[in-house]
Image 1 (cartoon, helix red, strand yellow):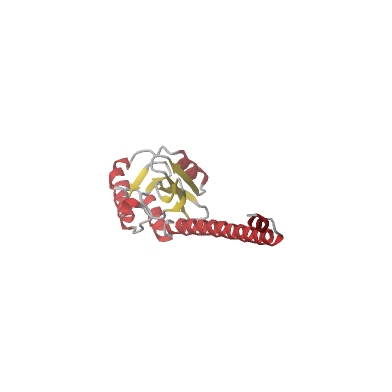
Image 2: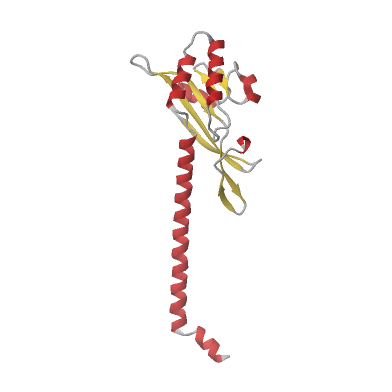
Length: 190
């Protein structure tokens, strides 16, 4: 019994224990840095994958400048229906007056022609700056990435805001009670 107790009190055991704890600490730090970089890289790739292509923005600007709004709304609907991106679950096109001109979600198409009530959309229309935000929904325990992009008419010497593209619901990652697990696809599209 005394020999066992003597072993744990020896300098050899203490040196080995210190090295083991330092090694454990180093693995923890490397693991934390790796997870943080993986998170930021996945989030960056997700944000890039949900950006609207430039040619779609140009087509939307052209339609928002049309005088015949009913025909332009039909073309906007066609443009939005042709977007094939599983990461985008909902897109609204809003003109410079704040009126919703297009919606790709069939269940929300009754909103077309109504004023957008979201203050962030109004802010983007007035300032001409992009808006993005990650929001947490407690009901389904998910974070959503919301992006509002202004649409500019670049004809002439000035850039005039003619509308905005609002992407209100994109699941980014799922937060569980045990930790963070990434969720980078839209569950409604599956």
